[in-house]
Amino acid sequence: MGLSYLFISHGIQAVKYISDKIAVMYLGKIVEFARKEELFANPRHPYTKALLSAVPIPDPKLRNRERLILTGDLPSPSNPPKGCRFHTRCPVATERCSSINPELVQTSEDSLTACVLYEKNC
Ligand code: SF4
Image (cartoon, rainbow, N blue to C red; front, top):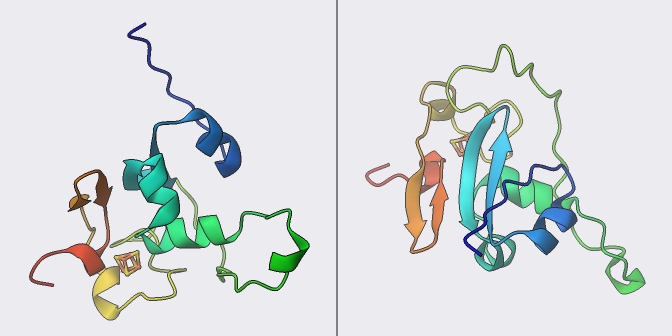
């Protein structure tokens, strides 16, 4: 029908159910954009990985699965940190991350990621 919806939610399972493509935002900035299947099968941005790791799975056999728990307080969106906005909580941040603001770069045919880990010549 040529119809598109922009669906915004904190409920990643609802987003998965309704969407074809997903943009993950952190402090008001898109950090990853991908087709749904690719995002869930191969998340690239460290925030996306943490987000998906926090999703409850209703299977007792997976109760003890390894989860990525973020530490530190969420900075204010009205005064985000300089550099990569996620660097104050990112488990793989380097010194460089506090001084550069990574742009979205193509990380596969169907995905874009804003992280120095995916910049060329990094
Ligand atoms: S740019 Fe650095 S701080 Fe930001 S997500 Fe990538 S590794 Fe983490």
